[in-house]
Amino acid sequence: MKFIELKNVNKTYSTGVTALADLSVEIEKGEFVFVIGHTASGKSTFIKMLYREEKPTKGSVIVGGVNVAKLRNGKIYKLRRKIGVVFQDFKLLPKLTVYENVAFALECLGLKASEIRPKVLKAIEIVGLKEKVRSFPHQLSGGEQQRVCIARAIVNEPKLLICDEPTGNLDPETSKEIMSVIENINKDLKTTVIMATHDKEIVNRMKKRVLLIEHGILTGDYMKGRYKSHESV
Amino acid sequence: MKAFRIIGRSFRDAFKSVFRNFSLSMASILCATITLMVVSVSFLIAANVKDATKSLESELSIVVYLEQDASESDANFLQSTIKKLNNVEKVEYKSKDEWKQEMSQYNESFGTIFEKYETNPLLDSFTVTVKDANSLNTVAEKIRDMDKVESANYGEDAVSTILSVFDVVEKVTVIVVIALIFVTAFLITNTIKLTIYSRRNEIEIMRLVGGSNAAIKLPFVIEGFVIGLLGSLIPIIVTIYGYIIAYGKLNGHLITDLIPLLSPYNLVFYVSLIIAGLGAVIGMLGSLLAVRKYLKI
View (cartoon, rainbow over the protein chains, first blue to last red):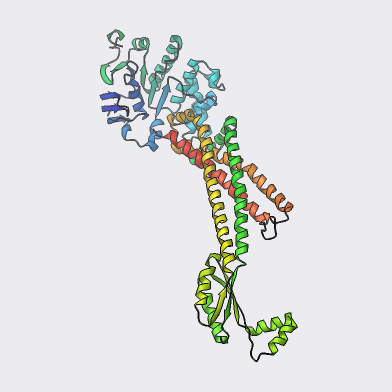
């Protein structure tokens, strides 16, 4: 069975806008997949559906054997614990330090403090922020904040890392660094990575599988390195 | 173990966040303080009104006179039947001979008058106390219908006016207290909602990193509890000292001896408990309602 399987997914918002139409796709364990498309193309809806921030109007979304579309509201947290999510706007808790922000994800699970500490420090080390453990988010640069967000996403060793435009707010140089952090996580931890992005340069350089969504329809599924930005976008 | 750790952390986070969001917490606490203060005062007034009407009501009774030829067995029978009536609290019998003796002792001239009669001209009587002053009329009417009863009176006109006034006063105070509790709940809930609105990002992030709904709610609910309790602190102090001082200054009654005030010790204790309980429960419910809004998708 595939790790992620979307079958005939439709999403129509209450406003009547159709965000996704009859979208089907399969993703294997350990893959690195880019999701690209214009603004309002439906790629954000696609990404949000994977961690059940949105529910499909029709069709099924299976992640790790669970039909996310049928998940009850009160059970969503079980799915979220298996998934790490990285956001464009970082979504850090402003009044917690770097350490506390990363530890927060584990405290939610009720882990012992003695179990939390080594995991948090390891995650912070992976993203290269060892020296800033005690800083608050407002004392960090954008790139550093994004690293904290990644550390928080991977601290629980998720099988799936979802990135929603993680480099959208960063300069090209910092973007490159962040991408290499994410790529290493994919390689070393065998974490499946699905990343929505606008950044053609990154997509062209990294030569990964690319899903192209246009007007809510999956118009292209390019295997590793087949995608070239001049074709579209 | 896991649950205990989550609960422990919730307490830590709740206290932390009361102080880290101090100005917002302060708004909620002050709102609770002011509204609970009003509730406390109205509670004290309501309790005193209730007590004053009760004590006046308990002094109302029906005086029943038996017919001249009623025998002792008639009297016994009547006493037991009256006792069985609804709402009857106590039936005190006084025979005509007792009346005669009492009156003769009270004034010698009564004695000389009585000596002119061959038989005792007085009547046997019952003093009937009722549980609920509103039933005076029905009880009196039932007694009047009984055999061997000459009359049954309770000062109808004056009593009915007094009772209807008491009734209105009591109902109004109850309604006012209930309304105030609702207003308090509404105001506190809304202020807490505002503080939580400013932290909706925090809730969103908790959800995104896999916090269960219960684990997210708990710190907020505890925070509401703490805010409610802190808000009830000043009203409780004011209730205790204010009422004790007022009671002392007024010598235990309001305007006349007819309206006694309740002794402060038990009353102040209960009202304080109610205020603390109200603050805590409303705080918790307010937080719960506010957080729930952000836990839905």
